[in-house]
Length: 223
Image (cartoon, rainbow, N blue to C red):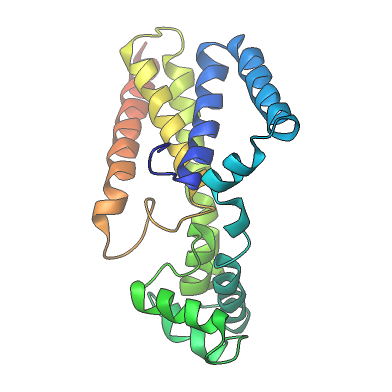
């Protein structure tokens, strides 16, 4: 992730690591917080700011995606109840485009328009809202809630034993948290249509978590 400069993945990794430290080495959170605080101070005090900005492409945070989000927000406002239909937001973009044809913003959007078929919002939650309306948005918010509820229950069931399944459940939960945080910046990897290769890792791990949950819940009921 560091080599490929994946900003969304790095932010997601941060939240996953914090979760693991909280359960496995809570005392290490102090050191982790100190390191983050120190690096933040060095960023502002030392002449390294331009290199950090260059690596994370901070000058591009508000350019490019804000063009897309402006267009997608107009699509959402016009189709907020039922959405544009599965993969239909693409065909609504130019009806609601807030930029002049031929402008820099429109050219950027056109490139993005031709590049992918769906997921134009670059956000899992807005992707569901724009395509499936308010009901899709509720589903996108329910998924992390259901996942966390089952995962935390599984961790609680396994906490006394603290065997390999306990650490497996922790790892799966950290992965899920990271994916839902990443969903703020990217559309794929959780639930979509036609891209099972992107979503399969999440659902395989979630299935394992469900299996562990049912196995140890049944075991607890019979004990």
